[in-house]
Image 1: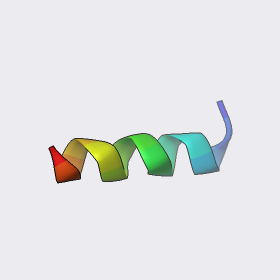
Image 2: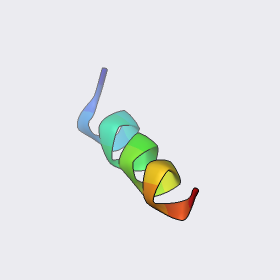
Image 3: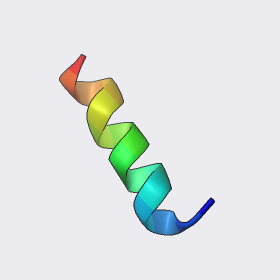
Length: 16
């Protein structure tokens, strides 16, 4: 996975 994907996943986790 690309860095952007990881960052996006992290952002979603924080949002939840």
